[in-house]
Length: 253
Ligand code: SAH
Image (tube, rainbow, N blue to C red):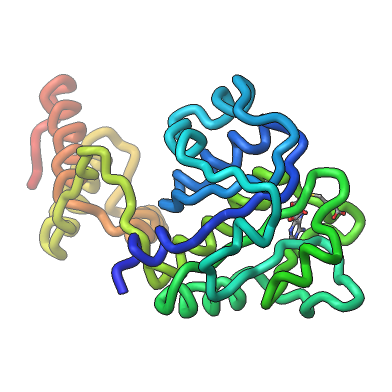
């Protein structure tokens, strides 16, 4: 199924969010990853200028957000629901890893609407809320400091959704700039550089062909490490040629 269609079937449900800034951050996190359907269950303060500020270019998601009074209402019509929690709950589903659970979420999205459910900033999800969910995910964290900011948790999951929807290869933004490419230098071009270097170094006295030592092997080792490109050979040989012209050393090659 088309990745964009799959992503459009994922609802991000925030349960009782306290800080409007986090709602804005969640909207931005969603839009950057191609998700668009935000549900707010009994938000403490919404709409709010702080939400708009934190959403920056994702204010459209805030304007289209569905506000409900209960989680039940936000989940109406969904076929698969995943809870996000930093803590295992007694009767809740076992906590799974984001990647595996998101793979299942996307498979379910091919059948219908699905949801990711996030808890309140202070209390997390209630046991009752978790019991509405088919699966639960915990983002692996530092065990001594395991609670992410709500907007950050939304970002991590939306990223996993995008990666899964595009089979790990989402298109990247090229922004109209094509990286510079030069064809690789051929064997004879590289040999031409060594010959040129040797003749200039001989002319300057830096290299004595009677007592060659390990200079040329070391230079070959240096240039051999980097695969020289045609363009780079031209630059280096240009530098050598200009030195010859300026110093009056004759070209030997
Ligand atoms: N103090 C709360 C955490 C609230 S953070 C608690 O201990 O539960 C707000 C929400 O972000 C959480 O309810 C959860 O949905 C999500 N979240 C934060 N850290 C998370 C983590 N490590 N794994 C999964 N979800 C997390």
